[in-house]
Image 1 (cartoon, one colour):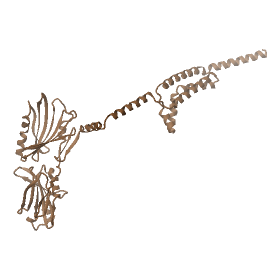
Image 2 (cartoon, helix red, strand yellow; image 1 turned 135 degrees about the horizontal axis):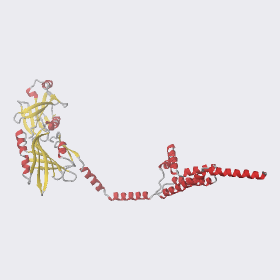
Image 3 (spheres, one colour; image 1 turned 90 degrees about the horizontal axis):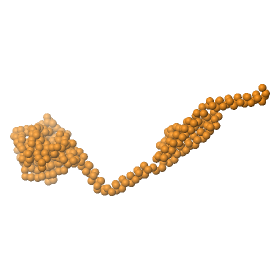
Length: 452
């Protein structure tokens, strides 16, 4: 074979070998796939750019305070938004390395698209329509708030406070109870009794809750008088009712006191009104808890809860402004406001003065030295040693009152002044003495000797 022919044959074989190698390279299939990914990436990013743009929080944090956390977040976010572009770039680089010139254009296009997508993400967030709407809404709110007067805001706040369930305490009348709203007080004074009515309403105004304190001119101290009053209580209320229907009328003991509970329906302007109540006697006066509402209404705050929240308390110790005094002994004291002088000066018993009220309570002062001139304070204290003594130095002595079959308690305190020994005694029904105990003690504290 001629030399030239041999060289042509070798050149042709080399070209065929190269062509076979090029045909077998993966670049033949990766390049079109890469361009498909580029097109999809462009479409996705165009849709993102056309919507409201908000700079990613990682990028925002990296630009303001760069650290490893924000840098890692930013890199992760950039890779995420280029999940289509990065594979296309890798396909292009691979084909270029395999000596396929068509891969160069794919690499250039991928890099160009990558830079544009990343650059857009670093742009400041423009004011979107949503932000504009929010600003406008905020402006409207400000204008509305300015239109509301200070008085209206305070009034609304007070109304909400008034309608909130509240535990109400009356130091003067000696009770606490939870009303569904702030109560109002009405006082009615008559010849037979003085009525204090604490009344509150439900939030819808359909249910009323009441605490009535009836201070009677003639106290009910004996069991017989209390029973007679309670047995006729409901009958008296029914006299002013129309077409009344009694549901319950039972005798009971409430907080240790004689009482009665009742429930009946009467008709007011054609509407059935349900009335529930408990009445009991304390210190010779009647106290009643009631709930009144249309029979069709179911109260949110039940009568049982209202009654269960009621508790009796010690009465606020109020003393008379004008003191009582014995000028001979040089003794002066301010008695409780509800007590007047009952007896004075009985040398046989050492009595100086006794103050009392209609509820059966009394406060007396005695000169022990008159009866026992040779006794010392230690001797008197020894005689009382078997009795209960509280922290204020008062001895509690149980007694009984045969005329009323009522258990009584006597509080006794020994005082020494000069060579004299005095005894202060508070006296009252055992069940209710706790309500007057503070009055006795405060009055005793006001005892002074104006001369030696």
